[in-house]
Image (tube, rainbow, N blue to C red; front, side, top):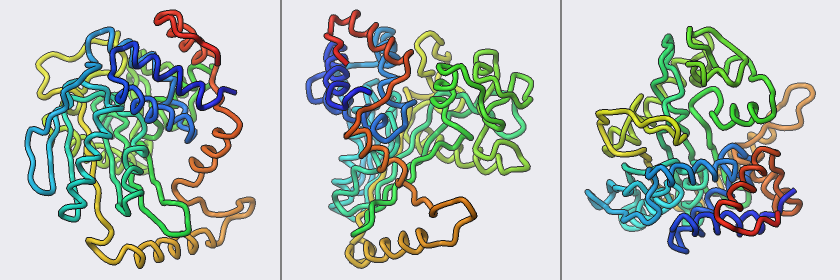
Length: 357
């Protein structure tokens, strides 16, 4: 186990060595470590070396000049100047919340950014202000649309965070693919097979080999196949791609730059970088906030008491598992796979940072 504070200190030092300003390094670390705390191990420090490689390849600007390039009272479009998505997206969410405070809701589209960590972090920023938060992003094309063998979409997550009164907040954070690519990477590190319905090979045939993406295979949309609703996952992923990139001027579909630095960026790009879409809605723009939150408590309590199948304890409310594992990991530490520890050791040598975790 590795303590949160030790991992935080080490990760922050890595971002500082990349040239990030102190406040940006702190923010990027907070976003990244939030994934590990919430049990989304695929999007936490396991990706730190990937950000470093992108920076070394000149694809991440450690000191971005984030600019609003178009806006109205309730909307804005931001150019992230190739900055870390871990920094660009929270800044965009702050703008969305300021606009919501002024006119009831705020919506911000982002272009020229990079991978932004877990979507849930950005959506949850709105909770403290009695707002509903939304966050989505497009991503490297690893997902094949229904009936296709070609990788055209990313895992394209959607997150929605809703404030409550006495109950824990409702936080839905999900990929629009059957599984996030990070989960496939974890299986690769563990040497385990993938569950059925996650991936297909280059011919479009279902496979359990987590390495199949390297041989031209593809992740599958949420639903896995047409009979089980993959057209719905494909449609949801398309919505994220359009909101995040077509709306903002970022790259979309097969042109989204890959997260890994060793793959080339496509030629004749239609936009700039990766795109995000973030929003905040003030509850009292619709009804008194206390009334809404009381009814959210009732909604959650009602679902918790729903009859369950034999062997199950209770219905899970979105956000419950992540909240529970976060409390455990803050107290007991964060587990890391051996290959991830090796990556961190390599970074400590690269930047001459003390590795005492």
